[in-house]
Image (cartoon, rainbow, N blue to C red; front, top):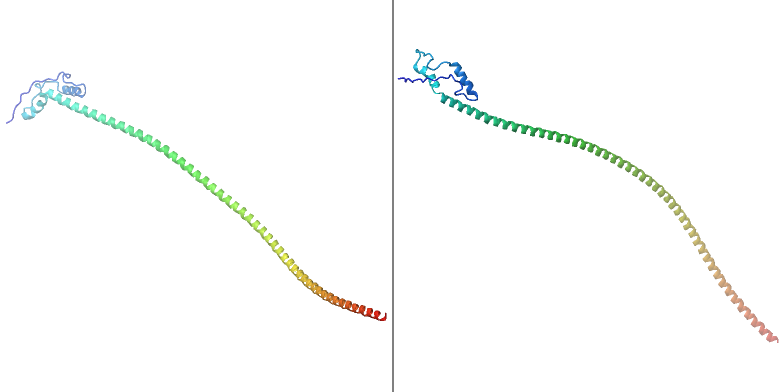
Length: 234
């Protein structure tokens, strides 16, 4: 069994009665422009079911509830709008900060990269200078070594010449020493001969002495004989 509801007479001729400052005013104006007549003045379709006819009348029968629901929806929308606006603003602020931080970081990174590139170039220049200094040192070492070797060679050559001269002098000294030895040998021989001659002279002198002694003895004897004869004749 179907129930029948009594439809109250409600008019919406004044759109500002339940209007809101935002979107509900337009909604009420739209509703009132669409329905310029009252609920009672709307034509009834007797061919349809009573429930189908009374279903929209239930919605029109309680405007305060509708307005409250609309206000609630509006508040929810506004709250969501404020919430999402705050979230979006926060996200945008965070995004701006992140972007600014990234820009600063990118700037710092670019500066650091530039400084690193400059340091690399300076290091490369220092390496090249070190390589050049090494090459110069190597050249100086080679030149110094060359000069020293040349000087050592010259000194060695001089020493060789001096050694050769010393050898020649030593050879000359050896020859002179040999000559001196020969001369000394000759002198020794001469001395030996002189010694022999002296010995012979000594022997001869001894013989002369002996002979002189004999002569003296003979003279003594002769003197003695003469004296005796004289005495005899006297």
